[in-house]
Length: 107
Image 1 (tube, rainbow, N blue to C red):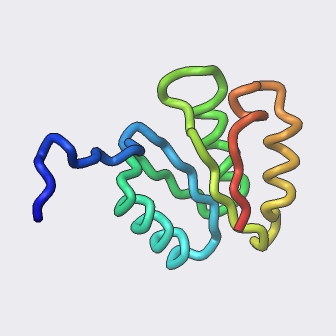
Image 2 (cartoon, helix red, strand yellow; image 1 turned 180 degrees about the vertical axis):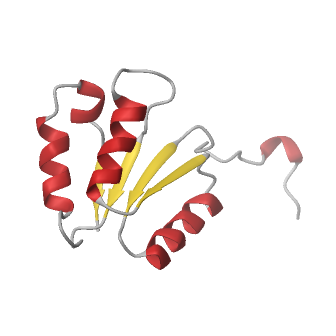
């Protein structure tokens, strides 16, 4: 028996307004994560290939609170030169609250 249209539950999460920064030196992994996030409905996905590029993106989008802020950072832990630990330390020590308190997922 089919359920009536009115009783169908809408998607409880609308990720179309989310902006996520992926930090990974592997282009394949970064693109794989971006594809998965797009399939989940994430609105905007940025990719940084290293820690210095991630810092630039965060300073560009999160220097001040706005609707353009990056909502979540997904970072690789092992990267050449600077790694995920150094990025996380930079984020948590930053003077801007919109950078300092940004959610970070480390892979």
